[in-house]
Image (cartoon, rainbow, N blue to C red; front, side, top):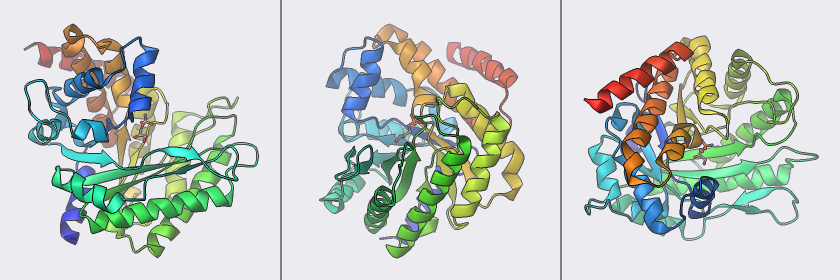
Amino acid sequence: MNTQDIIDTAKALVAGDKGLLAMDESNPTCNKRFAALGIPQNEEVRRAYREMIVDTPGLGESISGAILYDETIRQQKKDGTPIVKAIIDAGIIPGIKVDIGAKGMAGHPGEKITEGLDGLHDRLIEYYQMGARFAKWRAVIAIGHGIPGRGCIEANAHALARYASLCQEAGLAPIVEPEVLMDGNHTLHRCFEVTEEVLRTVFNQLYAQGVMLEGMILKPNMVLPGLSCSKQESVDEVADATVNCLKQAVPAAVPGIAFLSGGQSSELASARLNAMNVRFKSRMPWALAFSFARAIQQPALEIWQGKEINVPKAQQALYHRAKCNQAARRGEYNTELEKQIHDITLYKHQT
Ligand code: 13P
């Protein structure tokens, strides 16, 4: 492996005020999102959707890297241009989701273990040859009655570390994603405790597997109260809890932390990221960025509806959300700016 190239990729993904676009929904997840809006669910419609995204004018102004799914990295635009080439031409680094999903974990009711290590070495070599320079693996940790247990946390952390080590061996920068889910009525404090335990375990395993921390990105959840918890803390309280939790557990050698959105509304995800950068920016060892899927794509998907005629408006919505998150990285996002960016986007895309 060329160590410096991997470090350079990781740094480039969180450089300046850009962030990542996760457009790597598996076919079942993508189909679920389409079905909710009455969009037909087949390979051609998924291809058209991804073409709409990568062809968004100006996307590379705010997006450093795009995470693809296996089906997409093998697809072409209607005019025959490979999707990967379109991404590179837009100034965006292509990445690839390499886990094959979180499955029910034997002996651990209500908990999941992410699969995909078997044969991963060869798949990574193929993805590298196809142009991918970074990868993603998502582990899922649920909070509930008596869960998560150590068995689930340790197994998932071990798999994340094995994956990360294989990535670096193949020349790819790993995105390490242990997601503590928002579902449930747990408190913000409970999410803090679980997130801290998960992150400490993940970094222990990364150390045990010899993963080079300078050549990876952490993709965690924000520290949030459960969706159905009666107490929902303010944006600033969430920002403080999240950064304080990360400071306990994430070594300074990691160049960047790029959050998942996890089902938060687009505006809340931007506001919370913004608050972290306002309140802690000069005091954090790592860059705090975004790697959102739903919080960037959902408004565009709702406009697109699977129809060619809606492509320009859907692209405006995508560009707009990417720009808002770019502002949040700088600590400059607010509701007024949300509107201003909207107006500028409309102007830019009309002229
Ligand atoms: P969300 O931002 O929709 O949570 O997705 C991020 C992601 O990549 C999940 O693996």
